[in-house]
Length: 100
Image: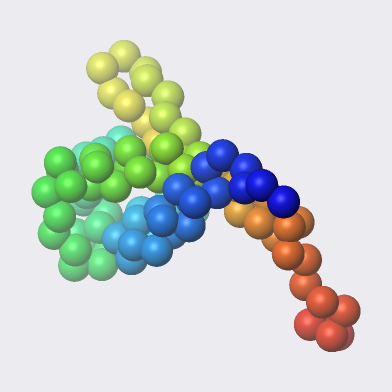
């Protein structure tokens, strides 16, 4: 079965611990700006990445379909999109033993 476009990008995006933390933060509070995410990564996780580095992580997550971006005025807001993750769950559903 041929791979759907974006599947490899999604796994690559999820392989990085910083990107997983960004997704965790968007689960806790969706619709955040780059500045808000940087602040939360520092205060909550002690992760002091530059804004440029976090921006690059967000680009990878967006290209993988895990983050959507909406511009409001001069700000860009980031939203989590779990649709690609649901597709993985449908591709490899839990076995009947795991469901018991």
